[in-house]
Image (cartoon, rainbow, N blue to C red; front, side, top):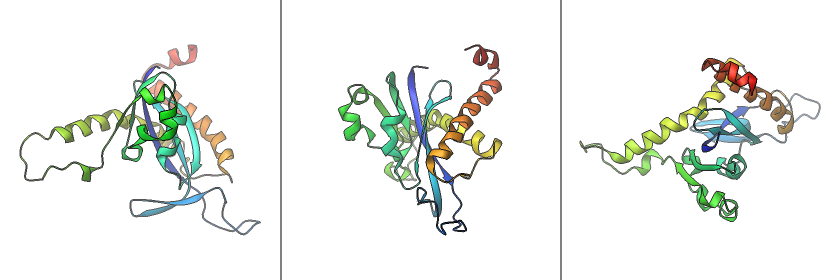
Length: 195
């Protein structure tokens, strides 16, 4: 699966209740705000192959960790292009990326925030910047499919265990199973089983 990579993250909510032996929340889980909504839990960061849509790398952090901080852990050695949402803008300027010989040569194609596209609504011509952002998003949407399978089909939208490490053990199995579901949906289950 060499070539391009899509990186993304999703929030996994954790129980905010303090009705346990210690009388407090899980110390590894934290709060973050997405839009106007506050979440308490963890994030799962994924590296997805741009061609096939299969997940090959996942990491877990507290919810308050920025997406961009996990970038270097999600990129493989043979990736030439990396797609990401606006949370990954500026990734190519980070110190851990610049120090790595291969990662410093990787091309980052991140979406800009809608407010960063400065074309007035009254403009009637072709907006090339919006078209470029739309094309990036059409590639990047493949990273959302495994999250949909894990959260909706498998029903794992909330963390079950205390601690990120225990939850990540389950997420490794869930994302491997999501790859199997996507492979079977594409009619390639025979190729997947023989590999």
